[in-house]
Image 1 (tube, rainbow, N blue to C red):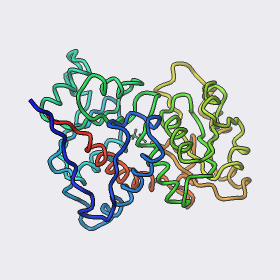
Image 2: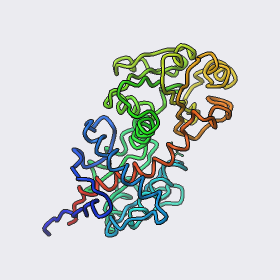
Image 3: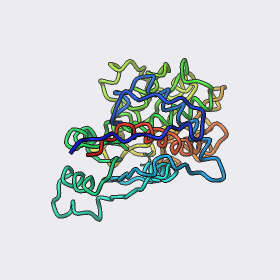
Amino acid sequence: MARRTWERPNIVVFTNLNMKELSISHLLGIKDLTKSDIDLIFKTADSFKEVINRPIKKVPTLRDITIANLFFENSTRTKLSFELAEKRLSADIVNFTAANSSLKKGETLVDTANNILSMKVDILVMRHPHSGAAKFLAEKTNTVIVNAGDGTHEHPTQALLDCYSIKEKLGEVRGKKVVLIGDIKHSRVALSNIFALQKLGAKVMVCGPTTLIPKYIKDLGVEVSHDMEKALKWCDVANVLRIQLERQDIQYFPSIREYAQQFQVNKEILKNIKKPVTILHPGPINRGVEITSEIADSDNSIILNQVENGVAVRMAIIYLLAGSINRS
Ligand code: CP
């Protein structure tokens, strides 16, 4: 049967944006994106942010598109944010959670995906505990894949919403100094942020215990510090990461209490910095461990703006990738 390409309605039905195309047909990682791709995603997200702040937060743009959200790992923000983004675009959606699925009976990832695709699904959004799972599925299936976080590899939509939120708060990302604090070794958010921030012209530092900073990280062109006060004095923005105990095979520091003593972002350490630092956290927050409630909920924190922007950024990504849908 002849293949036909789904024709994306022009966003111009509700904005005056002149649409271009992404250089990619899947979103597997920030590494694959160009600066122009990121600029296009941000410009499109600006339009969708305006939409989701209207009394009627919905546009008919993707009403003949069906999206399956495959979550093989727990999620609150990313799962709900994708679902809302898809619903705001009027796509039909189905949700798959590994725990109640036939994976338990031995079905493979590829069989699972191909069975879902047989039900005329156009896009798969997937979170998976294994690094490379999104790329693997993109190679083994004939559909558009959006990586919602794969193991310790990448979390591209998180990095895009982080950079979008920095731009919104500080006017631009270029030239800004951003420190990623904490468990860099097990963090897909860290790797995606490093790629995105560098593509947008920011300077990046990572700060944490030696055991949680991989040796290869310097090859990515980032600065490394193990001194929180020095790192916070250097930066304009601190993106505070959670200790990923669920991914740690051995103990990387003596105790949570000792980790917090050295690497917690709190009022005392920020008082010594004597300048405002914009605070981000991808969530979920372990209050009282990597950050205190006082700082997480302070005026310099844009943690909830990140979550709000996540919906607009994911709407933009799905809308733009829908242009790559092939229907046979
Ligand atoms: N930031 C993030 O990925 O959060 P969830 O695990 O709740 O989706």
